[in-house]
Image (cartoon, rainbow, N blue to C red):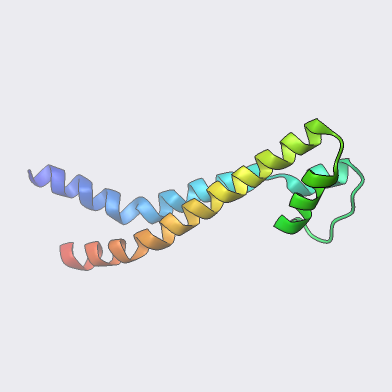
Length: 101
């Protein structure tokens, strides 16, 4: 039973880092700025606003471009979910650290 507690403690201590790494991966998969530049739509920064993406989804006649933008929106939502999970896991990590060590 002691090994089970050790593995649980390791998991709880490393879970925020794990969630952060997964969130960064999904943020890197969101390539909405590149999609806009390929269609010769100028953007101010690499972080394109959700409003601009949704406007292009509504107004663009190109179905392939729309599907790519929808996929970028999904990656953004998954990124936000993992960031929320990371923030939620931080208090658990702190409590686990002080309770076990």
